[in-house]
Image 1 (cartoon, one colour):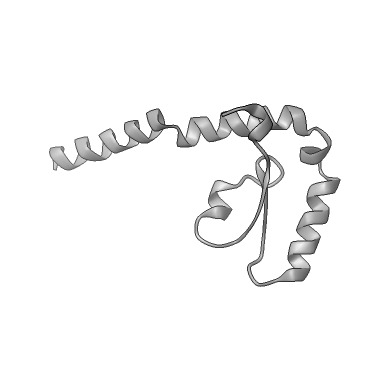
Image 2 (cartoon, helix red, strand yellow; image 1 turned 90 degrees about the vertical axis):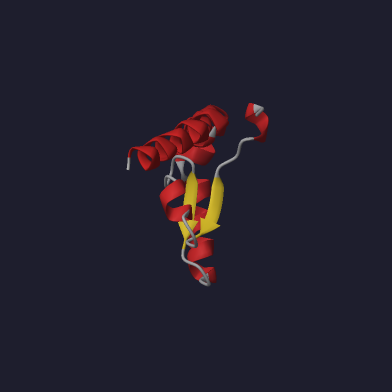
Length: 88
């Protein structure tokens, strides 16, 4: 993944986004079906250090995503589940 393609996200609070997005570090989460909260969250992003220091933050976001969602990490988690099932 090229650093230039990595961007912070603004997402609504659906599914597991609230657990996956670290407020102010990888993006922001706003309430679903709430346009006023979306507008507030967009403003918060543009006033944040995440926007002000975007070039450095891209690297941190990429590293976080790779650590949490890489195929190596997913494979390790899957292997642990299978090991646990086989022990039981």
